[in-house]
Image 1 (cartoon, rainbow, N blue to C red):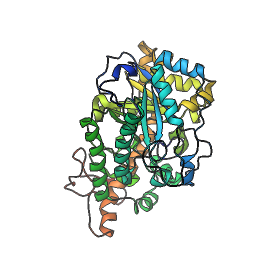
Image 2: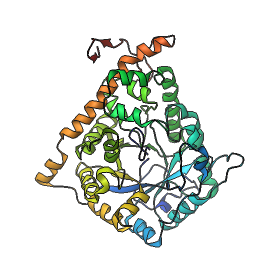
Image 3: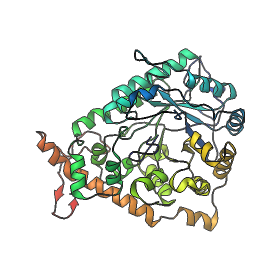
Image 4: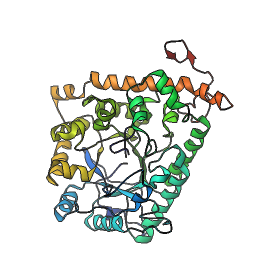
Length: 431
């Protein structure tokens, strides 16, 4: 998820309100998909990514020790009393899985999950891979993400801990340059986008990734493991023309598959960071509506990044939580727990967010708060221009690489388009 710096970042996902002990069946480590009925909107948090000394340019910092000072008895009481789900950052080859020679096998995450289990706090495995491999669930990491998904479920079973399911983080790989994200979010010039896309467009590679990530979802279903994702929201802007060029050009893919939940990163502060302007609360309602239109009940949103950009003002995050509740969001994971505690004065902030989710707007306030806004419309229009540019450039780039190909189709995955884009000289259009 970038959680502060790449294409519209970041991260994972879901939760139910019943205590985890209710799912302990046949000594399984991953809860089955059955759940008690829920009412209202649940607030959750991405958590566990507070690792002092983190430097994405220095892969060895992936194995540094977490800072767990925020997990005080008061915090645990708030999490338990309000049944607030945690989507805890579990790192492949650090917390679980094969540990590379010379690197430490950390147990700090296991400590948190065991505590959550004892208190009945819902917890999900937010799966990440080493920085050097891209960290997020990007296009080139499908095989490693599959290995990590299978490994984390086996690890949970071996350690006798309960996780509600697995959450992936489909977005461009870590260390994607700021200039790339800014150009795509800002609808950069044709020359700028063309230069960016020369090395990234690869419909054949996208097909392999599509099948790889779809395989993870189907494996999870066969093994009674709930599976979710927190995709970069550009995936939604990519689908309007029923082609997958923008995701290909930015290096990630969200396949059409039976996901349990999809929490698109409607990260208002990250949009403001990359575009230079706050799109306002309309971006929250805009992406939530798009998520539902494209993915039905699974389509949800995540909010973030707490304490940054417009969310330096706690009132704006509270407002956006109420807005999501007004639109009927079932669950709203916020990035992140540690940032929220640090930015808004500790665990009391969690209580206020829970209360905000329980008090959606009503009457005229509901109509006003959920109405489309010009800031959101302009931002999404700019991203759409980037999608058109990617669509147009796909046959040109692939022709230079030896075989002209159109963008892959949506929702049929890798069935190739029947007509190539047409360039009119000043605008890039679709047949």
